[in-house]
Image (cartoon, rainbow, N blue to C red; front, top):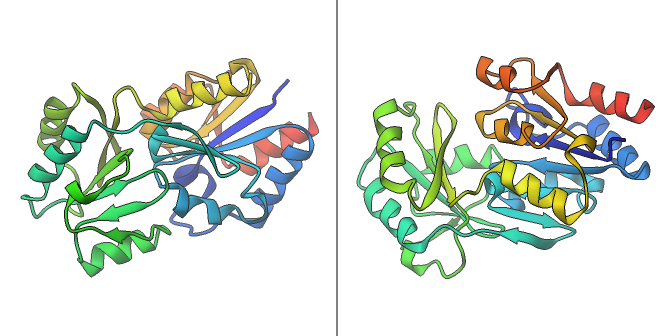
Length: 258
């Protein structure tokens, strides 16, 4: 019996650049809870940016944030995997020399930047990401759980291959979308975070439904018997899932009817 629903945020719950989760979706999550079905959101964003989006159910869901770097439930940290500090310093030292890129450092709950570029700050605000300015990465005393590398001109293959060769021996290096690459702790992905949550709450893969639309969601599909790719996702993502969904709400309604 299905007792766990996991959904990507950006491509599934707020697709097409939406800024808020619909009231209908929030009410469906509430109904799932009443029927003893847990709900988790899996996202590349930090906890402080995501939690307010869920309104009246914000205390009832599991947050897999920073692409698996942090898992929080009822405002308590279940899992946190920091990036090797030497990798963080090396990334900052190299990337900040290149004007094509901007960096965001995610802590346990917050997000930090080393730029005062107003266009970039406004770009992040549109996604609900409020950032703290820091003068130096060495001044960050908390664990860094994700580094996002942004580029407005699109991430070229040569740059990504360079990032991968240089830092993948001590961390996970991956692509979010054409404008972003990211770095998390070694072996940290949404999929490994999902597996940990299933272990903590004694949930089987056979009882898990996953919705995703991005490359970082593919390894979550591997931990779910019922995997749904959003219909407008890239072909590789659609091929990786067992089913295609137009939206999350319709499938959640089906689960409630079951």
